[in-house]
Image 1 (cartoon, rainbow, N blue to C red):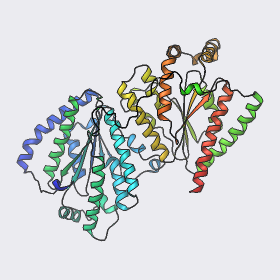
Image 2 (spheres, helix red, strand yellow):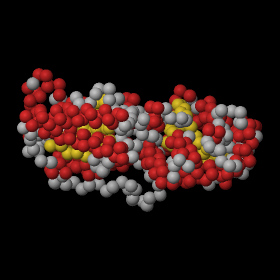
Image 3 (tube, one colour):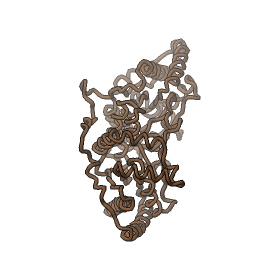
Image 4 (cartoon, helix red, strand yellow):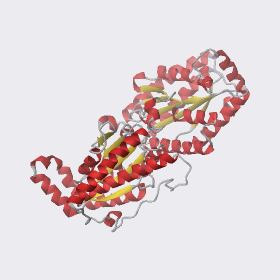
Length: 505
């Protein structure tokens, strides 16, 4: 894959100067146009050591309007980053719509180094590459441009470069373990890079191999690549649902087929007649909350995080169930995130961005009152997003939750269901009770009119996003006390099992 980067291309100063002025003008024009269209650009700068990647970034920063560019170097992980799933550090740095983010190494640097050192085996690197493909597919599906440049040259060229950098602490190559000979080290790194690039050289996110022997050729080639990708994005339809692979025409790739509309849904299997006596409720509530308090502290000691997601029909009792959980967990260990309409800052990013920001540190608990499922519920039913966006979201959500569970996070999702008659009774009770009146809005009544539409959307959501490690728990909510006990039993059981598995390791 790197043969074309060992030819020895170069560019004299006169030819370089003749092209740079026009290139800079066109880059600025394309940058402004992308800002106006709200299209984010991700530039991945990676490659062999001593190829001048830092110089390339400095040159791009000079040619572009720096006010719309942010540069990130993902070197050593901080304690805060190590205590969360690996992708968290990248999601925090995602550029907003119309912005350009330049990533040194990006999400490729650590996998290459881990595999190079021998800390990862083939299964590890393959799993990571699958995750990267899904991430890039998701970002492009949301309208982003991803430009990936790999800088390479011949072994002899690198040997001379590294010799000149021998006294510098800036070289990450020096941080990697030494092999028996430089030649063996070079060849192994090249082999690892070749495997990674081939696995992620896909459709709308291809790798551009740039020969870095001559700095003028390297920089000008990078500018041309970036310009071409930016100009191509401007002729695409906004948020065009572009394929990233070579799947046959008409194929929906990895997407599951849409669930047919069903008269009998998963929600119809919830027995809403279930109740619990008040005395039994009080006894069970106390016992479960005491256990949950103990489990939360044990999870903290073991660095096991928990994410609880609460969804349900309006007035189903989500708030009351959440309070019974948080009452049992020390406030220093948990956080409740209420999800409302996105802010302007949140709208400027991929919809999952605001949820990644709130993933808890190791040992903590985050409770989401509403969640990322708004994309396939409210946004779908109310027409706030396109069919392409919400239908693609099932795969994106499953991948997101898989990343959480793979990193050891406990994920439990609750759908609280009540009957249509019970909802009406609760709506009227809220209107008639002064201290509850704030809970009822015109939007609640409008949503009630679309009961059947939401019922179909919920059925598909449950069918397509319930996984063994991140299951949906259907909670019978007509009896609020019974619902609260159900929730606490699920949470304590999940934490108990996670701690038991941890003890086996």
